[in-house]
Each structure stands twice: as structure tokens, then as C-alpha cells.
Image (cartoon, rainbow, N blue to C red; front, top):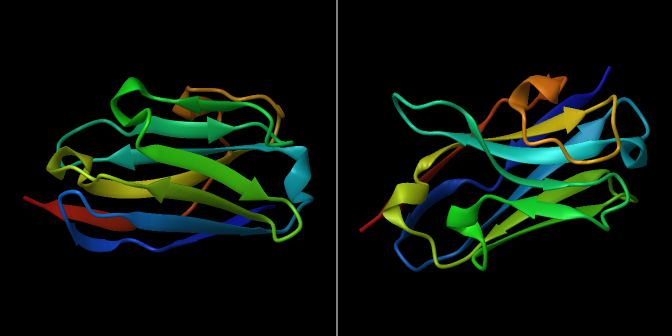
Length: 125
């Protein structure tokens, strides 16, 4: 089994930055792809960014391209989401997730096997 623990959320003004971290334990981290999802009140949980197991391939939803960067440190078993130029519409609970089956990126939340507990990101205008 894999356990994921997110950290780094908080309250920030529009235009500000936050870095989310997700620490994994339980299985060899470099064997699986990772994703960051977010869920705003009353909305579906949607992918924000994904990264392949080796870190060479990344994916971003259009609304965050150029502002967010996903990265991973396999030696530390941690995936990061650097969020710059934050906007009020980025306000949501952010979740990291592991796709234990495939090393490539999936944008479908049902392909992810393990989820963290979530961390709140609030962007004020």
C-alpha cells in the first residue's frame, strides 16, 4: 500500500505563490505516475497536473499552464506543485494521487489508486 500526505496549502492573495508537497511512503515511488487534482465546492474533482514516474513527461490543464509547475524528487519520494500567479478561481482543496498501475500520465481520476487527504488553497481577490 501507498500512503500520501500533502502539505503547503494556505491563504494567499491573488498574484501570490504557494508550493504544495506530497510525501509518499509504502512502495517504490519511482515506479508510478503522480497527479495533482483539485475540487472546489459543488464541483467535480479534476486533474490539475500530472507527471510520469521518471519525471520526463508532464501534463497541465489549460487553465494553469504557464503558472503551475509539477515536479518530483524520487530520492525523497515527494511530488511538488509550484503555483505562481494564483487567481481566486484556483481556490479549492488540492489532492495528490498515485497511479500504481501505469508509469505514464492519466488525466482520469478513476485511474488513480491512492489519494492524499487534501490541502486547502484559498486565493483572495
